[in-house]
Amino acid sequence: MNKNIKLAVAGAVLALSATANAGIIIPAGDWTIDINGNVNGFMSHTRADNNVAVTGGLAYSGNNDVFGEGAPSGNTTQVNNRNKQLGLTTGLLPAWLGFTGKTRQNDLDVEFTISLQPQISDNGITGDGATAHSATSQFLNRQAYLSFGDKSWGSIKIGKDLGIFGSDAILNDMTLLGVGAGGSISGSGDNTTLGGIGSGYIYAAWKGQVAYTTPNFNGFQATVAITNPNQIGGSNDLATPNAMNQDRYGFEGKASYSFAANDVTGKVWASGATYDVTSVYTTTAETEQSHTAKVADIGANVNVGGFSATGYYYNGKGVGTTFLGLLGTSATGQRRDSDGGYVQLTYALPTKTKLGVSYGESNLDLGTGDTASNLVKSNQRYTVGAYHPLTKHLNLVAEYSNVESKSHEATKAESDTYSLGAILFF
Image (cartoon, rainbow, N blue to C red; front, side, top):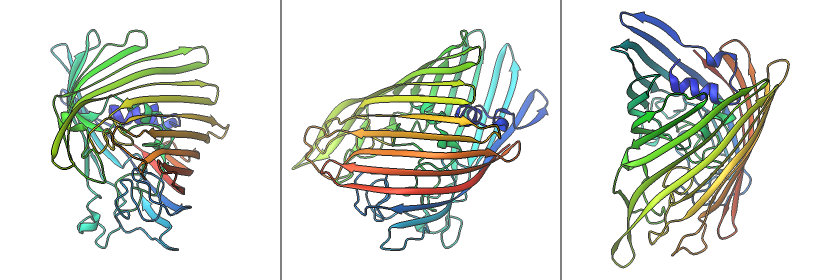
């Protein structure tokens, strides 16, 4: 199976029996080709309990999306004063078709990976994303990279793949096999749902990178990477969108230690990222403000018997919330502090059904030049879920998530998402 799909499903604490298997293996001359991926679909129903929009809030309010700029896109059904959102949607992990080729040449392990991510979520009038309101429903391309190396000295990767910082946070999130937080961007016009993104961790995203990974030293491994400098997103204040210019390549890194002792297995990790950013904002005249956006995290996953526990925490300056750089600076270009994390516990029943509960929170402080406003102060989420292997490769998933978004002016939005569906790996 494709390396990152395998990590995504085997690293998730609800990984089921099929998820560690390879995909469809085809010998092809000097190469071994692995065709792999998943297909999933969920019926999702989100109800807004409080119709107050919070800028940057993830709770569905009936009249805002994740950016606080208007109603969700796509053909969602909204009734009762627009406080409900219904859809057939792809989950947090998009449908996936990956192609990986491996060979051994000149004492080097050489690999390439290309993957495509279609999804079922577009329900516009044409059903295929051809209409303007379906612009968010795109055919994704999350991986296109080459790598080479040897177990004696490590490996080098060049291309597009999952980011380094925050990667273990999402790979250990139980909602990776389901929906998690819905509503704000999980309407049937968007590619994927949020899961625990923005309510416990910042999205690792898929980044152009040059990365070096060390050999595995009895469970210890580290990765350092130069990343696409344009990874910090978009604008410094959604109320007055302005430019964000990157002054150098980004730097990301991670160190981890995997262990096994008797019946106990687990992993601990720490990662970080820095990006130099110049904000261009406008008061009475255009002004530039330069700063370094930086963030670090720490996490652990421990498994014993049928139990699996995960704990995670991050802290950053100028990196904002939900997506790296989103709302990271004030209206005058000053960094905002942010932090968050999640705790999660799952248990496998004798029937192999896994039950899980997770609580996550992401916080955003005011920066210099900010005043109390409807800017998000915190996004909090708890999720309960059941994940059952119906066959070796097919898994049924049922989840409930509650999301509460609080602003700095003491307003809040709250929503509940119920989802039921299935995910199949090959």
